[in-house]
Image (tube, one colour):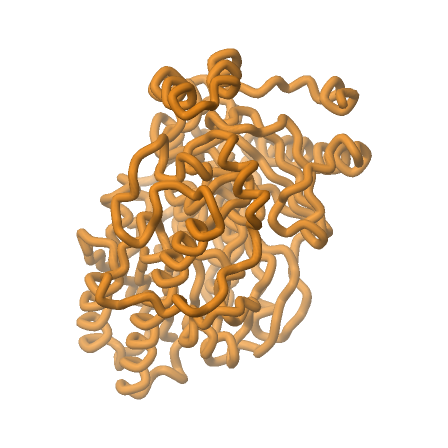
Length: 504
């Protein structure tokens, strides 16, 4: 079996043609979807980058590995404990790549990610790692081209290629132009929404779109989003990055075709996380445990794959056992992931009843996704305007504009019940050694979300590093009331749920 995994950083599904986008951002990805299987409710269990890829390659939830942040103790894997073997490739917690090697595949990674994030766990099981030292597709592609020219015709390999172009800052070469200059931008957010967001606050919000008030680092993006015209320039930058990346994906597919192995190669296209583009007043980043930051595309095309669409709920951690089963490998007992190989090969329903996703690098949140509902519980707001409980009807409100928690408390309480049940079950697994839980790991019964709060909050929005300077910026930009609010309760969100439901 030959497997090519195309890992597209910060790619939200609804900006791809095969997911219904009106702009032609992804002709090559769409070509794969037209003959493959497309998954519409596929979520990263732990966002953003480091937690997500750790979960992908270990097939374990962040609450079990401890990795939910981009810094501090929860940016590193919890040790296996006293029962660790001579190496980490001998027990039930061995990584996905280790298992693929056991199944006879030669594994290779082309990415800057392990060095960029200090993610040694991502490398475990790879036979080769080609560090690109750069992010843009035109600089990543030559490494993949060389590898495929040398190895494509061989049997039994897995190549993981990491593209970053949809990630801010949008720096597609200016000579590439703007393919969407004459095409309408998405209708949302409208002018009224932008004006409301502009008066609010938070890193990567409309008035502080590049972080905490910095100017645009590249010409493709405005300094702020104060109007629809600004948003159109902004989203053109994002969509152009997707199209530029898609061009290079097309070159990889053409290369496989020229080597005569495209039809015999399983091609997987996915992302580490999605991207908020105005949702919850976050632009061009991934700060939340919501639908836009955590839902990612998944397209699988190749021999043995049933063409069609899967609308069931799946975690990203479920991919490792799915592909392992697909190649007749052995699934370790220490994984949280559940295989949906029956969907991939036969179209059989194999989804989960509901999902719980987490964010610990830009805020401390958990989100619950069931039916058409999304509930977000915020523990640390990452210096943004978040309520302790938010409830959204995604079918009617896909951009998460109207919090229904107080209007529909029974639905919100159901979401809270599912969340409490999920956390309790994961901690019980940690105590008993079930699924991805490891009773021998240090701090195994401590929820890593609480550890992040104890350290002062998420890595990118620590109170002691940002409150004073950001409050000063809010005052100098006419947002004095927000500065006072930020200083009054920096970060931690009051958790009196009953009083929140009673308040007007």
